[in-house]
Length: 93
Image (cartoon, rainbow, N blue to C red):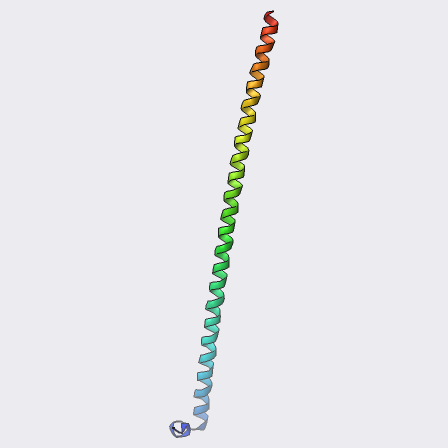
């Protein structure tokens, strides 16, 4: 085993050791940042998909309501014509 003091004098070895620990801490912070960023992206994707699904469901509901309103409008027109025809027939008698 090498004696580190032979390669680097006392204070220099301490500085190198501190730099190695600092580099390790920086790597851990970068890894934690990447993991958290990926989790946030995944959550945003899920929220976007859910929002998209909710928007599609709302659009389907609106379309169904429009169709229902159209059906009611048409049935009202038919009833109006029937009533008008009935009044004309009564007037003709």
